[in-house]
Length: 336
Image (cartoon, rainbow, N blue to C red; front, top):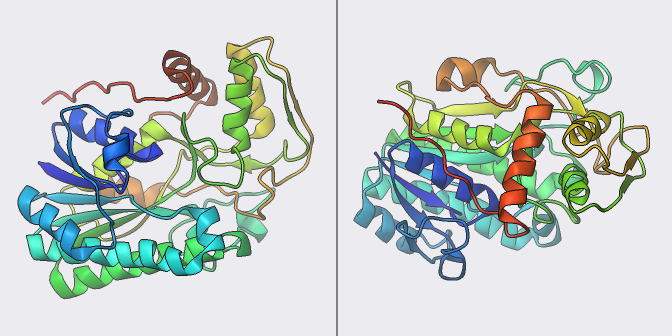
C-alpha cells in the first residue's frame, strides 16, 4: 500500500512514517519544512515535498504523481498559535483539510485518516470528569474549552469536511481524536511551555529537579506515541469503512503523582515535587478517560502501552539514546 503523509516531519509525523514503513507501506512525505527537516528523524530514502498544505494544486500534484491508497493528514497549526491567530488557523487547519480531501478526490484515493484531538470535546464535567471519570464515548458534546476554542473548532470543521466528502464522493474518512499524547520530543510544541509530564521525565534524566505547583491528583488518559502511530495504521488498513470519529487513548487513568512514581522506578534519585490538586496544565477540565469500544470494534485498535512504568521506561530509553534531538527508533516489521 502507498501512503501520503502531511506533516510528516512533525513530532508525531516522524513516528507515524516509521510505523507505516514497518508495516510495509511506501510513504511519500508532504511537509512545509521538508527541505530543512527531512534528515531529522526520518529515513533518508523517504521521498518528500515541501509545500503549503492549503495549496490544493500543490498537494493534488503530489497525490496524482504518487497515487496513494491512503492520505494521513497530520499537518496543522497547533493549539497555542491557533488561539493567537484565528485567521491563519482557519486557513491552515480548515483550508488544509479541504485541500487534502479535494486532492484525494482528484487522485482517486480511497481513504483519508485525519488527526483530530481531545480538545474538540466540551469540558469534561459531572460524571465524565473528576473524580468519577465515566468513559467518554464519541457522542459526548463538542464545544471546546476557551483555551482551545479556535484549535478545537478547526478540528471539528475538519471532521465535518471529511464526512461530507464521504457522503458526496465516497472517500472513506477516519478522524482520530487523540488523548493527551506522551512523546519524546514533544516539549514546547502543543502548549505555551513544556508539557509537565514530558518536563518531569526529561528533567529527571538530566539530573535536574522538577517542581509542579499544583495538579498532582489530576487523572488523565495518556496516549503513548507508539500507540498513536499504531492507531493510524489500524485506521489505514481496517477492512471496514472507518468513516467517523474515533477516540484513541490508553484506556487507563494516571495522575502526575503516578507518573512521578514511575519515573522514580527507573531513576531512583529523581528530585520531583508536585503539589496536590487538579489541572496541572492550567487549561480547565480537559482530562478524561476515553471509551475504547468504537476504535476497537471498527479499527481493530488496542493499545500496547497500558502500564505506566513500562511506558516511562520506553520513553527514557528512546530519549537517552537520541539525546535532545529525539529521533525515532525502528519498529519491527509485522509478520505476513
